[in-house]
Image (cartoon, rainbow, N blue to C red; front, side):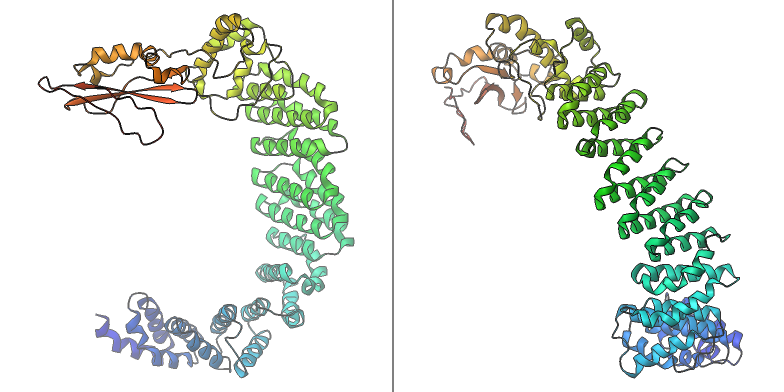
Length: 594
C-alpha cells in the first residue's frame, strides 16, 4: 500500500504549501519506523525541503533527514558541516542541528577536521548571539559539554549563562543553573565569576533553582565563604523536599573533603539536621556522609562519633541504629575516652527493639575485649542481658561473657525451666545457647571454646547427652574430658516407620540386625581394633522391594572409620546366593558373606 501512495507523498514533501509539506514530512517520520527502506528513497526530496523558507518545514525535514542518515557517521558529519554555513533560519531547526553536532562531537573529537571543524565551532559561537533564547541556550550547553574543552573556550558560553541567571523567566534561570552545575563538576574555576549572581538565587521562590545555586556555590566557593554559606543554607533547608536535601548533603561532604580545616562547621551542620525531621533516605545520606568524612579526615572521628551516638538516642530507623552501633563498636574502643560511649550503647539495650539490642550487646562486648579497664563494668551490663526476652540477645550476651572468661553458670532449676520452654526445632537456634546449661560449666577445669561449626547432633539431643554424662560418665570417671566424642549416645525417639520394609520377606531379620548391630561388629576380629561405635544408622534400602535380591545398608560411625554393613535378602526360594562381596570405591573395610 505504501508503494501506491509513495509518489503522492514525495510530491507533498516539496509542495509550496508549508502545511502540506510539513504534514508529509511528519508522515515520513512515522513511516520510517516500519518501512525504512521505502522512506530512504525520498532523500532528495527531504534535502530539498531542508532549504524551504518555512521554519516548521525546515525543522521536520532536518529531523527526517537525520533519521535516514543516522547510521552513516560520515554522511551525518557532512550534512551538519553543510548546514552550518547559514542555510538554516528556523530556531527549532537550529536547536536540532546544535544537538546533532553535540552528539557527533561526543562520539569522537575527530569527527570534524580542518575547515569543517572551524566552521562548526564558529557556528556554535555565532549561535550564542542568535535572536532565539532557545538557540542561545542549546549553543551554550553544547560548548560546555565539548570533550577536552579548556576554561578560556568556556568563557563565552559561561557569560551567556550568567546573563540568564538574572532573567525574569524561571525557565531560563533553571536551565542556566543546570548547565552551570554540570560545568562546576569538572571545571569549577570557570564558574567562579557567577557566584555573586547565584548567591542572590538562594532565596529564589523556585526551590529547584535555589538548591542548584547552593550546590554550585558549595563546589566553587572558597574556604572563607563556608561559614556564610552555611548560614544561608540553614535558613531554607526545612522548606525543601528530602530529595533536594540529599543533593545538598552530598555537596557539603565534597566541600568538607576539599577544605578539611572546616570540618567542625560542616560536620556540626550535618549533625544538626540529623536531629531534625526527615525521611529514611535523607537521614541515611547524612550518616553515610559523616562516616565517609571520618574515613577521609581522621580529625573528625571522635566528634562525628559523638554526634552519631546522640542521634541514636532518638532514632526511629532500626537499620541506621544498627549501622551506627556497629561503627561505635569498631571505632569507639580506639578513641581517647572510650567510656563516654558506653552510656549511649547500653541505653539501646534498655529501650530499643530486639534487633537493636542484639547489635548493642555486640558493641559492648567489643569495648570489653579491647579496653581492659572497662571489662569488669561491661561484664556487669552484659549479665543483665542473660534474661532478655529475645533468644539472639541472650545468645550474644552468653557468648560474649564466655569469651571474656566470665562464669555465666545459672542455677540448675533455672536451666531446667529454660529447657522446658525450648521449641521443637530448637536445634536450628544459635549454638551459643548450649553454654547456658549448668551441666558442663560446673567443672573447675573447663576451658571455654567458641564453636564455629554446626552441631553434629540436634540441640535437644545435646542437652540429654549432657545430663546423661553428668549423672553417669562424669561420676564414674571424673577425669573424663567433655567433648562431643566422649558424650554418651542418646538415640532420638522416632515414630516413623518405613512401610516398604514390611513388604520384604526378610523384614524380621533386618529389624534384629538393627537392634544388635553394634554388638555384631565386635564379634569380627578384624573390626574389633577400630574402636568404639559412636552411632549406627537405620537400614537404608539400596534396591527396590520387588527385585530378586533386596539389599539394605547400615552405617556404623566410629571416631576415625565408617563401616558399611550390607544385608542381602534372597526373595527367590529356588535359588541360593553365595560369595557376595562389595567393591570399594575408597578405603573401607569390606566384609564378604558366603
